[in-house]
Length: 180
Image (cartoon, rainbow, N blue to C red; front, side):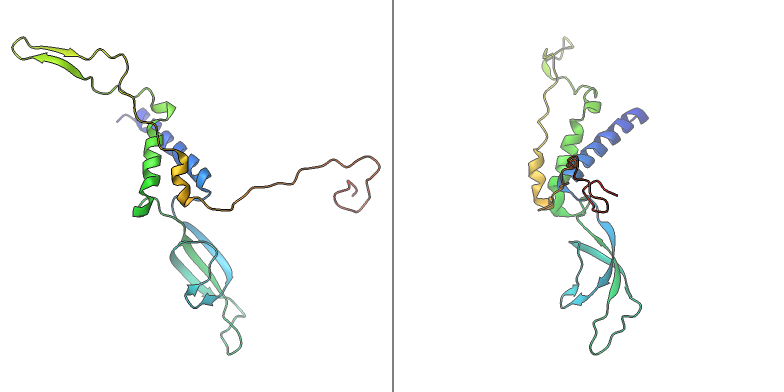
């Protein structure tokens, strides 16, 4: 594979990954997190991000000594999230990425597929190829909704509208009225 073709394939895969990450709202590989003020529970650490892949370190916070009436508090570094590279249940994500990358516009002019032979003769040494003008069509990539199983639920992005302050209602010192 030439370096130009390799670069086109890399861009197609990166674009497909970016689209999938934006849709899912999470990374496709585990991410490292650090949380402070973590308590232990009956089943282990009480952490915000799931699924936890591995705990990298747990450090007892200064001033939080275990005692009869206090619960120790830790700073925990850990990896959490899905691992689309190796988890067997994420095979549909890998399939979606490959199929979408194959349909990228940069790969549209890839070499045509092998022509189909319509007839051949042995002694006359002739071969006739199918006269179809277009190569066989590839199946469309799967719908992005097929990956919804891994999508973070309930995430919303909201920004309150900016309303102009009507003239004459500027009050100095009160936020939101235009006064300083």
